[in-house]
Every structure is written in structure tokens, then in C-alpha cells.
Image (cartoon, rainbow, N blue to C red; front, side, top):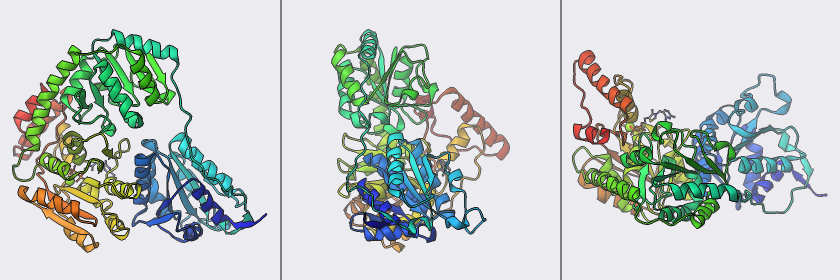
Length: 577
Ligand SMILES: Cc1ncc(C[n+]2csc(CCOP(=O)(O)OP(=O)(O)O)c2C)c(N)n1
Ligand SMILES: [Mg+2]
């Protein structure tokens, strides 16, 4: 049998799995893999980043957008440690990733050699597959197994590779095949569907709360909502699954959700959970109302709520079965009441979206970003107040995509997400929406977008502080502390990277500058000085937060002798009552 170098065998398996790109930084302990990738450069493109965390975050984002596994690689020791954050992002948002990490030469392992870190121990908690390659012989089988496991368990597979192991020649047993992983389609039991249908038919006030698990079932979900005439709520990461302008849509549920969603939830007599492991039980209805939960994963059923009927299966076919078997309802009184509620909410949102006061309000900025978007823009949103403004004020349509770091909630995810979006879909516009703190964590990789000619638009909500934390401190009745960031001229920075940078300070400049960004065929940073006093208030202020705000006011007055500017009273009142 023909012989092949083990590093080439590894890369051949990646090719078999239709891996067409890799993110990473080369270096001593991983260079054998990089060398083999060089030989396949026409098939697998290497995206060299400036920080390994960005490699892992981009890989995770790519998987969120496409469902396909992406690969991140780095040397062992420091490079591998840098990747950890993006790996947790993939783990917690349940997407497949393959990490190839270099390691000290096998003969030196255990001798406290330079850069030797126990990577198997390091990755123990984050990985669904975590092996150190001990010999070259079966490399193809091991890589295969790693990728299959990442897909099957929707998580991160790690292969740690001591630098000398791939040096050998082995028998070429890599099959000449193309693989595609497909989860078996699961159908819920008929008997359970019948029980669920009975509950649905009996209910007067059903509420449907949808999570990202329904990402591939948009049409079925909308058919179901129309058919039973029920209000549709979403979790934050599911933004975009129900178009914002859909008549049954009540917005997202939770601390940064809408008041109508909260009220629909509290008033419901039946809760239908679709593809979500929603954690904030305070926002769910009281536990004794009936509940139907649809999930592909049995272990999610009844996690947070007393579930009467668990429908284990693909959201797509389960929703279709429910639509087919349940009574059609028109003019449901409950939906009408929710829609009335939503009308006032939308009126308030519209007022905010048109607020041209100075300094620039983030709400207006969102409305302006929406105007330059196309009908299939991918929005990659960071963690901070930009998460609140984007989820609340951007109105997404059926073909928009929205990604963020939903469960890990890591700052710095927006830029890597936009880079991955352009790689996944070069023809779709990619807009990153980020805070100044979040961008500062990963900004060096703007130059990656420049280098690979990925014309992304990065909009920075620059308030020179960690505003989200400021409001958390206020809501908890604490004094503001350690939140100042200073000012970075991100526009100058963009220019210095070979991209394009714009500073926006005046309201009148927002629209023309965004228009220029839209038409620039280069990566752009639009650095917008936004109002640091723009408070991302919860849609519905729950009692503890109201108490926190009051305590904060009293403490600032007493301990600091000043009365801090509170969010406008009008806003507080309409969200509290
Ligand atoms: C890696 C990481 N560190 C810290 C936090 C906690 N945190 C959440 S939001 C936030 C502030 C974000 O600041 P910025 O990006 O400037 O956005 P702003 O809230 O000011 O709009 C912080 C520190 C986090 N989520 N992730
Ligand atoms: Mg900020």
C-alpha cells in the first residue's frame, strides 16, 4: 500500500469532511499540520489571525451560521490557552468545532519542557472529544472520530498533537470519500402529539416561547403560530426566527426583553416551549399551568418548568404535526389583547428610534443601521448594551441572521462573527455591532478582515465606558466603579490597518456615513460616539431591580453627595407598571 506522511493524512480527512478553511496562528508545535495545509491550500484556506481567541470565536460563529464544523488551530501552551474562550462559546451554544493544538515533542512530555501545558486536563471540561495523538498510524480514524463526535454531540473536539508524532510515514488508508454528518431525523411519538394537541385545543391563552432550536423550522413555526392564533415569544439568541413585524410576535422574554412578552407569559394558561432551555424562570408563567416542550434533546425536557408533555423530536416535523392535528383558531381574544399591548410597545420603540437628541442615542443608530442593511444581512452582535439595543430596536426580517455569544456571553464575539460571516457567505452583508470595550478585546483582528479582503462593517457604540456594568451596578444599588475606558479613536485605527474608518459625533452624519460604509468595498469601522446616559432598561422592571435603582439613588446622594442622572422617570414608570 502507498505510504503517506501522517500530517498529510490528517489534512486529507479534513478535506473529506468538506472543511474548506482553518483559522489559526502557526508555530513550532503545530507546524507539521500547517505544512500539510500548505499542500492543500487550493482546497483549504488558512486564515491567519492575530489572536487565537479570535480563531476559536470565528470557528464557533461559522458553525452558528452554517451548522458546519469549522477548525481552529494553534501551538500548545499559550496559543491553546488563548483559544479556550471561543471553545467555551461553541460548547455553550451547542455548535461543532474541531481544535488542533500542538504539544511538546512526545519524547520530552512530562519533563517540564518549554510551553508544556497539560492540554488534556485543560480541555477536559470544554471538550466532547479530547485526545492526545499517541501515534501516527491511525491518525485518519482519530480525526474522523473527533469530527463525528463534534457533530453528534454539538460541541468541541480537541486533538492535541505532540510535534513529532505526525512526522512519520504511514500506510495510506484514508478513504477517498466525502462525508457529511446528518443527525437522524427524530419524530415525536403519536401518542404524545395527541396529548399535546388536546392541551392546545383546550387552551384559551397559549403562549409559544421559541429558542434557537427552531432555527431550521422558521416556516413551520410561523404556520403553527398562525394556525392556533397564539402570541410568539423568543429567547434572545433566537432573534430573527420570528420576523419582528410578524403580527403574532411579542418580542423576546427576559431582562432585556419586552414588556408585552413578559405580560403574555404571565397571563398564559398554556406554555409551549420550542427548542429552548430558557434559564430565567422568573419570566416564565407560574409553574402550575400546563406546559408542552419540544426538544431534540431528551435531557432538556422539564429542566426549568413542570412539563406535562415532552415532544422529543426535530422542531420542524413536530411543529408541522401539531399544526396538522390541532384546531385552527381565528380571532383569539388573548392574541388580540397581546397585540394591543404590543402596539403601545412598538409606539414607544418608534419614538425612541426617532430620537434625534444629542449625544447620539443608540436607539436611533439601530434604526439607521437597519436602513443600510439588505434583506439577508448577517448581524453579529457583541455583549454589552449593544446586545440590548440590537435585540430591541433592530427589526429583522425572514432572511436576516443574528448571532451573538448567547450562553457564554463573552465580550469580543462580534468582530470574529462578522469575519466568519463573510467567509461563510461572501455575498451577504456582514455588520458587527459592538461596544468600545468589546471591540478593544479583539480589535487587532480587524486587520485580518483587511488582509483577506472581507468587507465587513463594524459599528462601534463608543461610550467610553463599560455601560452595561454601570447599569448593573445601579440596578443592584451599588455605586459606579471601575467602568471608565478612556477613548480610542477606532476610525484612525481602522485607517492604520489599511481599512476605512469614520468617526460620527453628530446625528446628521449617521446616515451618510453608514451609506458610505455600505458602499465601501473594504472593511470599515464606524466609530459612533453614543450617549453614555442611554440606559438599557429592562423591558419589564421586576421588583428587585426597582428596589436596586432606589437604593443606588439614595447611596449616591448620601455617600457621594451628588444626585446621579437617573433614566427618565417616564421610561421607568412605563416599564414598571
Ligand atoms: C470577556 C468578558 N469580560 C467581562 C464581561 C462582563 N461584561 C458584560 S458587558 C460588559 C461591558 C461591555 O462594555 P462595552 O463593550 O464598552 O459595551 P457597553 O456596555 O459600554 O455598550 C462587561 C464588562 C463579559 N461579558 N465578557
Ligand atoms: Mg462601552
